[in-house]
Image (cartoon, rainbow, N blue to C red):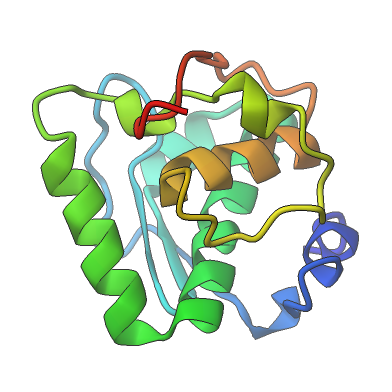
Length: 151
């Protein structure tokens, strides 16, 4: 968590509020990637996938992605976050992963200069942008493209 503190301090979010649970029913792996969920300040990580990540940079990436969702929850509030996130998942259902593509416009923004709830990007695009900044040596492939919203 200490490695992520400077990043989230830029957004006024205290990572010390986050509680990470490894295992506990999150044992499903999809396409070989970590399956995880965030609910407010609680991050639930797939234990088997987490333990299988030999690269600590990949673990940091996954943690940063999920903590970004915690920060988004904190800023937006429960109802607003949940409604938008579910809407984004529904909107792109069947187009697996498009909500994770990193648009060049978002990549060009320096960390701390954009709102974690920027309506031009999906919550997952923003979370991946923060995660790649937190863990630039991650081996998790970076997909680039237009924003899911066309920006």
